[in-house]
Image (cartoon, rainbow, N blue to C red; front, top):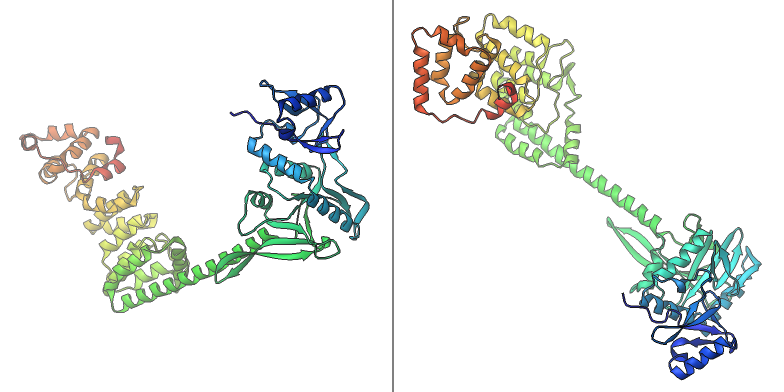
Length: 544
């Protein structure tokens, strides 16, 4: 890191009563060492113009003279070794500016005008002649006063300041419960430099202050940022107003003063904008929902081929619009003659309505409770079996994909019917298998592979399931399996072996028919289908 040049460029020479510039004073080596001789002879003394502590005169390794604070000096920003050279230069310029005629004029005007303000303790007014000393630190504000129960400090700034310096002042006064007012003179809110931005962002208020010199009383010109709302957009502009001290607001948390609360005003406008956005979003969602509901009615009444496009429209809805649609449909709570809406549809629809019921059950974005029974306890599945007009297989498959769970009442009813109808017995077996699926998207695969599944289930239960064979006709059952499901034979053989059926079949194969089939299967070297893999993994992990 490049070493700093002189960190203390200006010093108060109490012997001559002037501010000296170290760069000029020590430019000539002969003159510089004459000053050094005077200092060491105690004929000249130098003081820091920031903290007014006595300085010592030191010599660098190259023989250059410079001012430094004494080893036991109290804190001073010019002692801070973390400052960059640019920060040091800016700070020195700011300190020498405090001694300018304009700076002196402003602080005296502020002090004198404050004396006439109601609430100001006249005896407390200090114009650049009082140090505030707290916790080993001290600051000398341009103007200090007490206003009712508050302590105010005014810092005049006519040139740039480093953020380091601004924060050192801001944090010191805030820490000790004093309200700091920066008095600026030349600033441009429309083309802000670092000084304006650094002061502006100390709080959310974004107020700049300058002394109003056009009036005889104490007034500040406040240039503040204002937020306004127009045509659903938030805009900001800058305004200026001359204000009295009593018009200021005091933030006791940040110890900032402000006239206009930009942050609060901006937040209100954002809330308003958000509210309008929500209202517009709600209106848009309601319009979409009404249009979809109208199209469903139209499709159900006379144009069933519209249902695919309606389904696509529903899938395109965002989450909020879909929520509004389901609130309007209200299928979770709606009832007809005491029945849940889905149960009502299934008990009253005719064969010509199958497009509608297919749409309703297959569109998973529509909220439906397929497991909600009627008040008399009848389930959705029972409604399907009672209504002979409906395409039963299609609807039951859709119900299973929707997560329908067989009830004890369903099982008892279907077992009774199965005594007289083998198809009902097969359906019950498939329903029970589908109820074991965690992933309901596999329902189609279960139904498509139901013959294969019945073979594996038969081995698992030691009972022929889904095939109309007499009990324990395992040899004929196995021959049928190898003849008709040869491309899934690896799955079947694994199930037969695992569940102990393989040896029994071999024993029953007195004529060797089954074993000849096995040899033929082996010679074929038939590629095994993978279409059953997902269902197999889900239903029969023990066979892996």
